[in-house]
Length: 170
Image 1 (cartoon, rainbow, N blue to C red):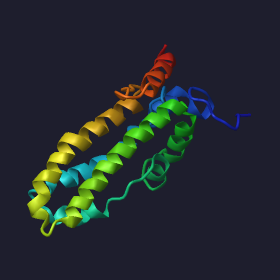
Image 2 (cartoon, helix red, strand yellow):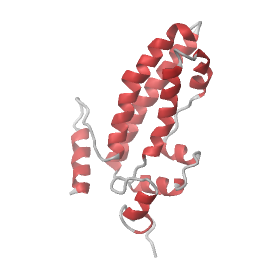
Image 3 (tube, one colour):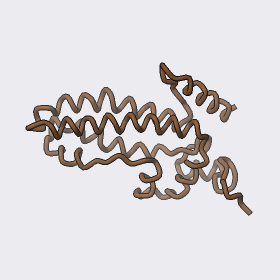
Image 4 (cartoon, rainbow, N blue to C red):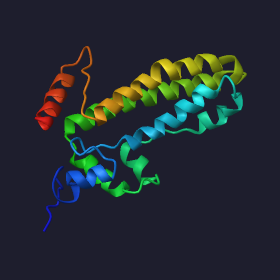
C-alpha cells in the first residue's frame, strides 16, 4: 500500500518513471511549465515585425504550476502535479518567486502595450524587455527546475535552498 504523501524516488514517483515523463527525478519539477512563458516571449519578440500579435500578447494570463498542467496536453500532467507537491518546499518556493518575477515582467509589458496608442510605437521596447529581462528570468527558473538555485543578492534564503538542493544530489 502506497503512502498518502508520495516521496520523490519511490512508488509512483520512482526516478525512472519521472524521467520517462520528462520530470526531473531529483527535484520533482518539469520544464514543460516554462512553455507557458516561452510562448508569450515569442509573441513579445515578434511584435516589431508583426504588431497584430498584440492581441495574443494581451490575451496571455499568468498560470501557476498546477494550473498550467491541469490545462495542458502534457501526457503525465497528474504525475507532474503529484511530483510538484513532493518537491522540496524551499525549491518550490524559489521557483514560485522566479515565476512571480516573470509574471510581473510580462504583465508590465502588457500594460505598456495597452497604454500605447499604436502597438508599433512600443513594439521594439517590449521585444527588448522580452529578450533581456524575461528570457533570463525563464533561464533562472529552468535552473531551479534542474536543481540550481541562484541566491538573491539581498536574501539568505537562496543559500539555504541551494544547500537543500545540494543535499538532494549528494
